[in-house]
Length: 251
Image (cartoon, rainbow, N blue to C red; front, side):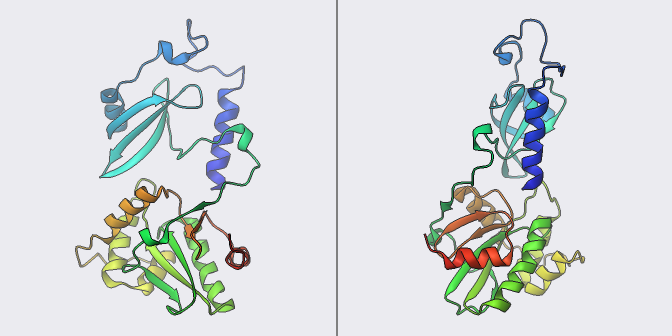
């Protein structure tokens, strides 16, 4: 999350520095730069090697925003007008929103099946926390430790783990997730978190694909994504004390 925020600030600084010179600053590009640059869906598909569904100008000048499909998964990327650089950003943050706390969104818990979830803690605990995690995500690895610390502090909390591999960022996470769910094994999840090599999946589970479709439906695109017992969505890492405080405050 910090890396994405820093990247966005860097882009703002670059694109709005008067002395910077880019290929889209040619003659005639006054005001609307898109008027002298074009990008078709076919051209974008050839450049990015994906199936493109939509191309439009991004909120930041000098960038195309491209929606497409890669390996069966929907993705959003940004391409500069010079068609030389791809910028992987899930969303652009308006300057006016910098420093403001993100709006807290609630998820309908009834939309999330837990039959394939791995459970950390007592399944009978009154507080269920649902976590969408990626076995190769560094912040997920940090939160994995915080989950174990949390259940040491409170027996009333259990974590239900839904595997959500970010295949465009961590290409090996998909097969690791399948291997873990084929065995329904917390031990394999621990091994993945610790960087150990996992055995290949020995079943043809559809659970990972179903989780990917579910996250798209719920508009969840960050790992870890933490859903509190009352449905509040916390995108990104938090530590155990902050988590316990949030669970203790209902909204």
